[in-house]
Amino acid sequence: MENIDVLVVDDEAVIREGLRRILEKEGYHVETSASGQIALERLQDENYGLVITDLKMPGMSGMEVLKAIKILQPEVPVIIITGFSTVDTAVEAMKNGAFDYIAKPFTPDQITEKVRKALEQRAVLLENIFLKKELGEHHGFDTFVGESKEMQKVYRRIIQVAPTDSTVLITGESGTGKELVARAVHNNSHRRDNPFVAVDCTSLAENLLESELFGHVKGSFTGAIQTKTGLFKVADGGTLFLDEISNISLTTQAKLLRVLQEREITPIGSTQPIPIDIRLVAATNKNLRTLVSQGTFREDLFFRLNIIPLDLPPLRERTGDLHLLIGHFLSTFSEEMGRDIRGLAPDALALLEDYAFPGNVRELENIIERAVVLAEGDLIQKEDLELRVATDAQAGGGGYVPQNVEELKETKRQIRERAVEPIEKAFVLQALKRNNWNITRAAEETGMLRPNFQALLKKLRISVRNQMPN
Image (cartoon, rainbow, N blue to C red; front, side, top):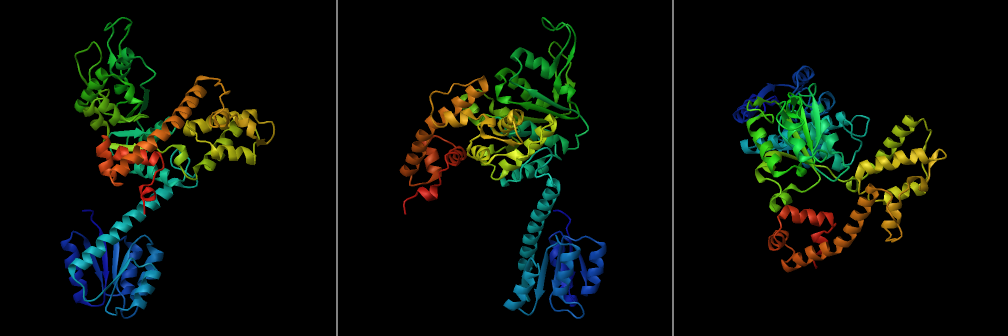
């Protein structure tokens, strides 16, 4: 248990000592004070996790102590104890910031339960204070931009996991910022002064990936004209980020699993293992559980990677972040290009607000950069965005022809999603109807895991409560 310091303030010695015995038995460190004045002197010099004070005391009352604490140490929860159990005093104490109120006589269980709940609230409050401090005035965290609840969950998870050496698996659609998360984890860890090495597992051929990761000795294969240090060793002491890890072969997966288990690598052509000290962060835009069920990804490696999962929300689910991101990219590219762009025309902004962003934040960044280049005045116009995919493809215009491979991918994805969505909706709704709207039974009947079935419901924006007949 965390060694929490508790201050008990009461003019009755029997109450002070009784509370001390109850709380010390629970593992807390307890200090007592016979008056409000002495308590406040201590609060000016010492930090406490919780204060328990009597309401009616000679000299300074418990209510006065409470008001002073809310100035000196506002994050400290206060429990008021009184023999005058009236609604009015309870309401007044709560209005002035008391966590809770308990009347004499009380039982040890009542006290320990109130204390436990008060300290839980304190932990949440301190976490939120720290998070807001980290966010500062930048509307984000680290290199991220965004204030939405969805992104605050991401920031909180980064803060929680960064100080550890646990392996992190980042999931999310393309363009959501998985490498930014990996860098944020590294930059907020004790490894921050050591290397951060990023590897795109899709950019290297299979025969080159092993050499890149583990290294090779001179002459070990054709073309190995000199000994090469593997990226696992280059990242020694720091963080190795394996992006799109779902693309590595089963053979390389087996070798990677062994490296993670043994914490040593053997370069190609060598028989001498080399110890490594790295923190591994992996990322994928695919569902590894599905790949495991299909036999294309090792289950034991998945469990080894999925120690700390971190899911990045797509831009369309980041409520309220779009305008912040637009402003950020607009400012960045205007400065880089020496342009004085003061904003977007109303119809241009409306177009972005209605756009689904299949390429997520990366796509928005590219759109704004292009618009800054093309804008002829100080306002970005609708045509400067060149959202042909958004206008023609979403409207079902068959005359639109993609101009490059990225536009082709986006167009195909949107057409595929529009075609598949009605079938998916019918599939889940019929399964729910057959199983009396019980999600667990519907998932079992269709052969899906319950979390996957729920994820499909969320994707299709289906609320079981709203769909159920009255």
